Every structure is written in structure tokens, then in C-alpha cells.
Image 1 (cartoon, rainbow, N blue to C red):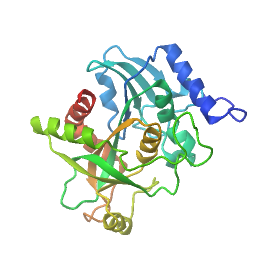
Image 2 (cartoon, rainbow, N blue to C red):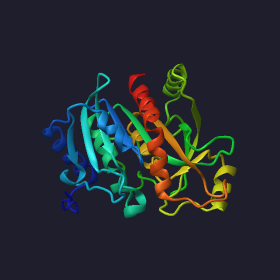
Image 3 (cartoon, helix red, strand yellow):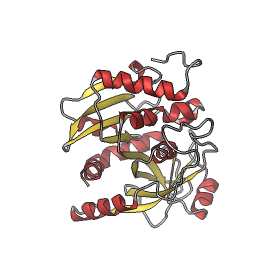
Image 4 (cartoon, rainbow, N blue to C red):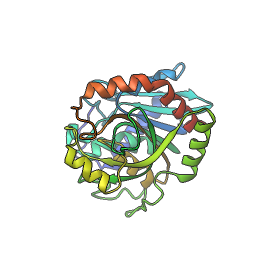
Length: 278
């Protein structure tokens, strides 16, 4: 439900959406989860959920990618109040960074303390394999944009937020240890965001590897910036769905990403469970 926001500030629109969700029963969520491509089935683990379409929330709208549900799912899970964004509105869909991060801003306004941000990504690190899971230790923003450009929302965070500790190191260590106890190996590395929607070229992948990226994708960075701006904990998890362009002599397809996510969904779900529990 997009309302005419020309005469209202971004902060007012965020608050309007948060108040709407609060009125529907989304009460003080502790954990906020943003699900990436092919990973939406995790939302089905919430028992007796409150489900609200993005299109029903003032100032929000669902994205157009077919395997992104465009739903807010709220409920208790693992003893915590959890809000899940099942699907994104990608930057490449709208060329509007405010729309891209609007759900993350609303999660901040609702009081989310820990963000678990997930994605399906291309594997750049040639020592790793498609099918691996990677904890994001840092990111490189190659989108050419930043969601904090424009007037700062002072009530959300500072004008010039530090990005050194965006992906909480203590939580990463706890999550790696917890996963290892269950025989789950978590890689740890740097995620680089390109805008998409075209997959990266082999030359761009060589460039990304040269500047320190281990994985590439088309999301996550804007939402992590918003969460960090507000001083919230951030855990980033990438499912390395395929080897990036040029690593193997084969073309890439979106269907390949979705199919690979189905094969890993149980292990992925357990990692997210642990990220909630730690």
C-alpha cells in the first residue's frame, strides 16, 4: 500500500509503517531476519505466525522477484519474538535506495536488536565450493550508492557512522563454534555488492577477488548499513549457491541459485536457528 509521501519525511513514513504493524500485533520483536533468494522457506518454521503482505503496509510494496514472497512473518521462535522479511525489494528493481532499505528501517523502528541478514551469493574464493555457507566478516559496497545519502535521520543514528564493526565479531565467533559442534562448517569472508540484475562478468569477478572479496551478490549491504547506523547487532550469512562468473567455464542462471538453495535449506535453517540462540 503506497501512500503519497511527498509531503512527509522519511522518518514519518517509517514511523507510520511501524505503528501500523504494531497495531496488527507485531510487538517488540527482538530478532529481525531478512531472507534472501531461495531461502524464504525458513519463514514456515514460525508456528501460528502473523503474516502481513508488504503491499498491505503503508509506504511499502513487495518486490518483483518471483521467489521472494513479499511477506512480513511475525511470531515466537526459539523463545524469541522474531520478525521475518520473507523477500526483498532489491535496488536493481527500483533504483531507489530508500525503498530498498525501508523494511530494515521499519525493523529498527519496531525495536529489533539483532539483524540476521541472509543472501544467496556467487563464490569468488577459488579455495571454496558452491554449497558452502559464509559468515560475512566485512563488505565492499560496489553499488555506487549508500542508503544514508541525504538528510540524516538523527533519531536513528549519527551522520557519520563507523563501519569497522558492522558484522559483530563476538557473535561470529560464537556462531562458528556452535555450528562446528554440530558438524557444520562456516566459511568467513568478505561480501561485495554489485547492483545487478545482470550477473557479474568474469573480469568483474577477477576485480572483486583482487580487492579482497570472497563472495558477490546484489543485496545485504544496504540493510547492514541501516542496522549498523542504528547501533544494532548484525549477523550476515551468505549461501554460496554457485561459483561466480569465469571461475568455471559455464553460464549462470537465476534458476540455478533457487535450485541450489533448496538443497541446502535444512543446514541453512539450522545456522539461522543458532544465530537466534547465541
